[in-house]
Length: 252
Ligand code: 13P
Image 1: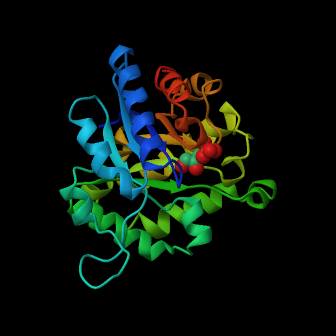
Image 2: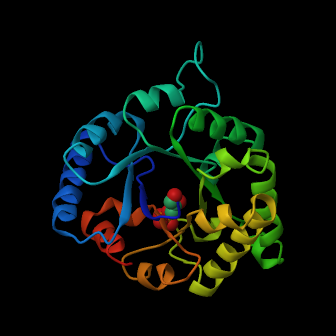
């Protein structure tokens, strides 16, 4: 079902003590806030997942991981499997973030494996896609996003695809303060929905949540979220301050 979602991607930020403080500030704010049926997802580093899922029992948010292994189980030193995440109460997982594609050379086929393993373990993938600045400047942004979806996700069967959440994150907007304009976001989100409709039909397309990410903050979230095809945000920098994250949640 199509849902409004605000997910905070903490990336590699906060110490254990700082994480504890931030989660508690968010919880205090969520208790007071009218969430307007917004699904709030907190995606801390792996090491804080246990604390975050523990606190989630007393509050109204879900927990997401920022990554998962493309292997199922066994001798993969340093990896964390979907099965492990599920056993810790993790309900969502970001895959295909541009930082992982660029720094860790993640491939489309690895992303397919990750999506399949997550779904097998009842975790909802938040699949990131988005173009680099030269792609946009040369007018290739639609082709790039189409390719990312085609290669990593469009081999999934319809029942599996129906559980995927898409996050459109233009790489030139991530951490730069240069947000996509509401028109650029709406145009790309509508394009993504049309691709899903062509591949999986209108019903699945209508029910897919498509989030925007890239310098989304407490000031611009309202206008971005007011677009018909923008179902929420995947927030980086602005989710590291409770007041900003709460204001974004309250932007619908
Ligand atoms: P910023 O909000 O810091 O631009 O990061 C967006 C992002 O990458 C979320 O996954």
